[in-house]
Image (cartoon, rainbow, N blue to C red; front, side, top):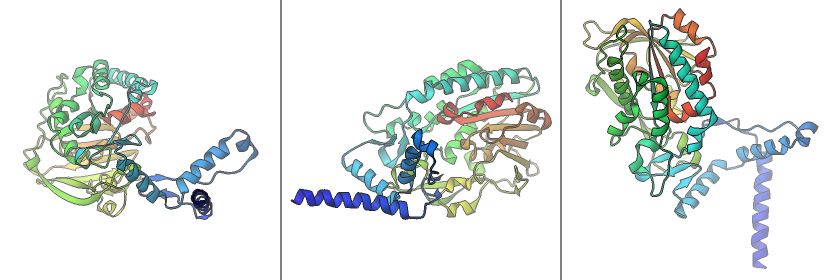
Length: 393
């Protein structure tokens, strides 16, 4: 009898919660997960016949389930009590690190191989333009660098193989060895604990690797001295101690939050930053974003198809600055906290995101008289991005 009562209780609870989920007003956007939630699907004969209606409705109920965030948190805590070290492709690492697990299939997929081919063809195309130099910086994810933080028996894919394949295809003269630089600095806080991005300190060391590669470029007609600015050249501020990133949203906020930093040159550079809407700013940082859940938009105000930075250096600066050079950065979001570093060396920097920018790259290079190109992606994003083909526009 007691067992029947328990069964009845759970049946009533399950159906009651499901019914409440159907009655509640749908939530359009989840700030915690930084994504739009599924909306109620339209009922049609065709959707019922092909089975898409029930599939979409199941997704809708899952996304709109009452107390959804609390259930996710409870599920994660329960699984952690069972000593699970990986949940939803997230490793629970040492020192409160949440580290994404990327399987080998991501880097050996047909899409990843196509993207390497597109990149190789683009490099070959640029090599035919004697007025432009090009560098490629592919940033390994935390699972590749922070191996000492991974739980026992974790088996992430060795991204070295993927990076070596890229270098072999595009040539070492175009390849920026970010991997070695970040491995050297792995004892420092170069990746967030709750987010998939590197920190601004990680971006700084990537900038150092790129600057060194630029100075060592084999393109004699384009070779420049580009000494990276030292950490002491920047005023470094802690602007937030309450950042929960994309990885934390998968498993709920059960670890301490991250810190967000800003780097501002001690020398007084002036910036005019213009986005695709012709809106202008004088700072790379958006302090209003720190009041929201998606605090990573503190850097550059989030994703944009196009951004142009015009930099005026202080008089008599000792920083290597080239007023006649124009850098084009083709990127994913790892470049957002990278741009404040490279913009101190060029009078003009243009940044585009191939997810949103669909115009001709060749025409952009010609129209804006681009002299230098940097392609900057994380390994995971580069392997998975379905827009790399637009390099060849």
